[in-house]
Length: 370
Image 1 (cartoon, rainbow, N blue to C red):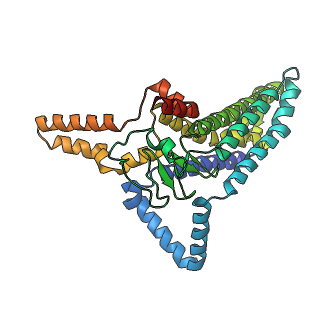
Image 2: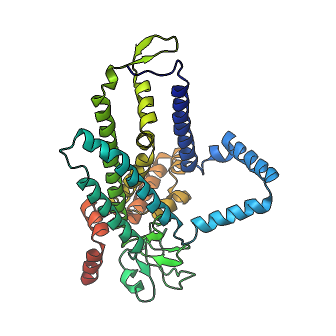
Image 3: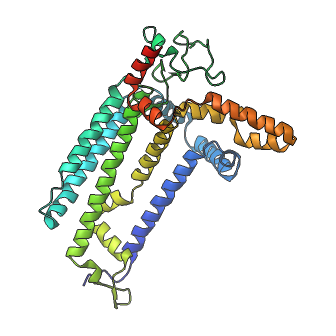
């Protein structure tokens, strides 16, 4: 029998930690995703944020706060190697855990299988694409390359207007380009600046960035699979589901999944923590978002501009339509449909994928046709 002390204090402590972890992570994620909503700005949470800021300024010297904010700004809004080092550290620690805990257990219970070939292949594949994301030219626009990107995309007259000159680079901005204030350069088909790669994601490396995310997800999925299997084999080998536990009153009861989970956590804390962490859903959601972008031939920069532009506000459009006569409403909807058609760069799924994953060939063929 699997015996525990006469109470369930350890079990409750562990469950409380897991619940607090999940709750804290969910709250932080919601605060980040909906930071600009009116509810968070002016509602109860907005008032709580203002109160917290006042209390912070009251108890903490202002020069400390100012120094912290300055360092945070430098860290997040300047080119540096901090997040590259952080990413490499997390990858190394994760694979140390894999080598020390998971692989020995799998070879102990399933010695005839090879448990390292696939992980090694995925690691090298991931680091290959990560290296390309860090070092690859995202599509830097300068005096020598501006003509290369100038006529690739038509100007839509709204987000991208002909004849506009970058105030920093002093070059005419091609359609879909943007000046990155962090890297201090204009980038062709700019998507966003990635602090993890210390590089921009643009027209020439968006495909590599997506492949980096997908290969990273493959590593995490394979890690979850192998970790789950190792715990399952351990449970099966020692017949833990057939054991009993001692209840607080001294009686013996059949083991529950909660108690089993607690036992596995106390025995293999690093493996269980890796399984209950939310890294996979976060990276998976981010990867799916970028898969959607390239399939629709859009960029993060363009979607942000559309949301920030009141002319593209769907709520405002609905209110406007409800307040107009049916004939005028039909005309407005037709005009909106025309605008949406005019600003889209969608060439169809296959051509969109070709444009992103075979960018240099796409640009070469485009110039030949021109």
